[in-house]
Length: 493
Figure 1 (cartoon, rainbow, N blue to C red):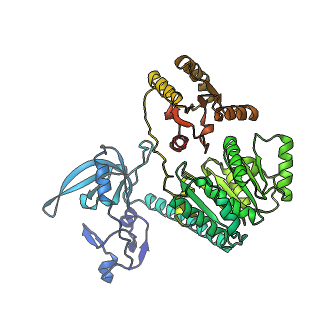
Figure 2: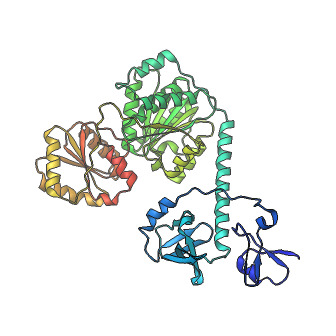
Figure 3: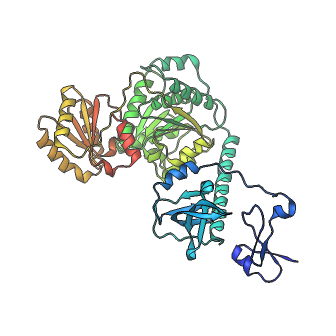
């Protein structure tokens, strides 16, 4: 007999000419009515291709079943999306058998024995507007095949990127031991174990002659900036330029001051380029970067402008990468052709983390907290004027300061009025991104100099700002912030 290949069980049943051949997940054949099904193991004595043994995840699904309601969507690994219809007991071989009942398109039912429950998983959170798959249909298998192809394509692309990076050449930047030791001696704290390992990883990458692409992932306040400082120092002392790109103007100002203070006395010129930089000064800085006079540039997205050129860029440091958009990421890719790249973040975006975990990017984790760092205590409460007054007054009485963070600029006037009535004894100042650079700088400087007790602001203070005297933060309408935003904000105190 001639075998005719078909793609579904339904078509196999309807085939009248020759013997149909169909790929189905069957271990052995069977006979039902006038239909005889012969499997490969019936002919060959064994299966040619064995499916990869699935990891048992029954325990996980059993815990999910307790939260399932009749009518919820469930995914079967071989048959696709069905609707959970409860548990049923069937008589199989004269013995009762507990099964999970699933309803598919055309009201077809599938009974899955509870011992095979690992083939099921819950569908996503969206339960409406979802089409059920047809039992024995080709749609689910086609979707699976399409997804597998996408995963293969993504894997190929990642391997290609990694291979290209491995083959590219970059400047070898060795450490000048004596000068480097003098620079490290200026660090006023003791390095933590993880911090020291991260620094050594980065310095090792800089000497390999291949472009470094390392992600340093560490909690807020765990010392990622010191890793960047040491990498920048080594690179600049080797005669290449360093660009430090940060998401906000305030963070650019803080990093600039930190770099300038730590590098004072060394033959290195540090410049700042952001909204706070005047037009005339910005033009001068761009000229210095183009002719190589400036060694280290700290700035916002202004450093990514296409009109800006570096004479000899050797190291690119990206702080808080999750804040940069797609266009800026593309510009970063253009900059990083043969350049060492160091990325710092406390909350990496999933793609960045995936690339680090798969080895496309190197990963260093700083998990050890600095000595004497206390845990941040977090309280989730409804708006309570008494609690707010007590928190603000308590911080003021011990000589500290407070951040009061609002999700929107439009909320700030109302909150300011409430605070003036609620706590007339304290001095409050407001700051947000729509202010002129001069206004913003004056306010932040005054707050840093303790001329005000409370800074009422938007998330402009989220990224990396370091103010040791601020020990309390009140987040207004916390439900309007993202999880990563709240995590970053929490690290500011």
